[in-house]
Length: 79
Image (cartoon, rainbow, N blue to C red; front, side, top):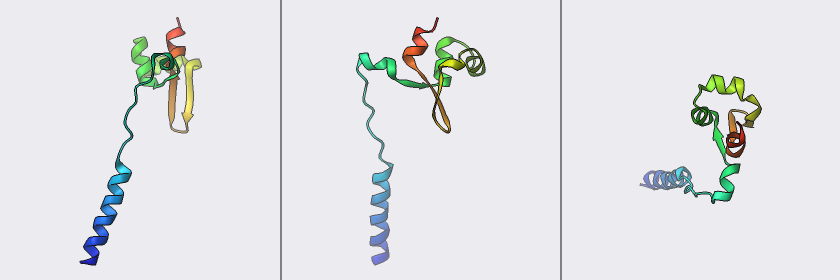
């Protein structure tokens, strides 16, 4: 019985860790500073991801070792 109690406690702890944070909508004045994935930016410009990386490389920022992002305001300002 004690093994079942321990495993139930562990399951409760795991389920708490898995809970995601609620998504909060940014106010309109902060939308320009939002970081979006390169794939979304390429879709906005109407070109492929490879084409975006080639022609708009100056907009791409390395957010983490595995993630590249584009600031939405800079993308909108680009002609």
